[in-house]
Length: 283
Image 1: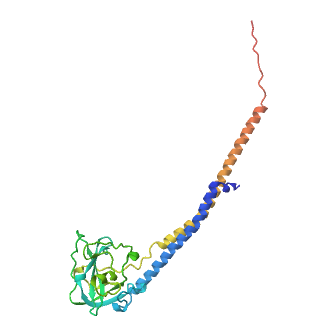
Image 2 (image 1 turned 90 degrees about the horizontal axis):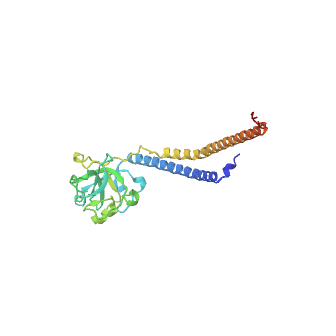
Image 3 (image 1 turned 90 degrees about the vertical axis):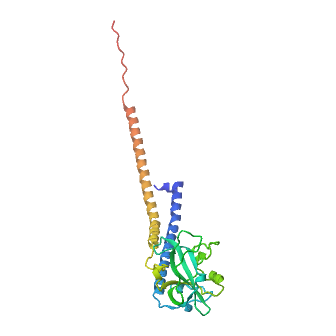
């Protein structure tokens, strides 16, 4: 009845189905782990943003790699802007997530031999990408900046290629190690993403806080993969039953055709032979 399952076609189909089930289950768990990571990161961001601001030197020091647990923590820094060594960071998106321009990064001299990088915000790129853009002037004199503590950007962490040969004072990544080389003096690890004070005229445009409410579609994708895995054996059973039904119907049609053919042959044999008649010719 089910001997067709031993055919080459059905053996291949069954093996493919058996191989797909664990793959789909694993893909479901991969998406589930991504969901868990997103939830944990949202919690970390929310907790960090809600923390009380501390002096930037409490969290970082020259050459220090900022731990993930200190990301987005509010910090304060008091010093004087070094606009001579200000740089712009190319290919950055505005708050509308559509407009492409620059981040303005200005070193803040803390007055005690230390310097911290401050991302003052976003400006439009303009039409000429080969020269240093017109940047809103940084406040003069001593100023206290409040912002979110951010880790140094790297190609491995951000996916942004550190392109060389850019126009003067233009960079691709915000990185304290690279700026230490340019400045020739110690720079605190990481940088401050400014949140206060507000810029004069709203320019540069302050970077909005990271989204920590959306959890993304990963959980939905995980459920989809697990449903696909469950559908494989169900679909296999449906196909087997359909194949069995179709084969049984075909066999029944063949049987009926043979019986009809045999009955027709029997009727022909049982029928009387026709009588030959000779027509008499009358003269």
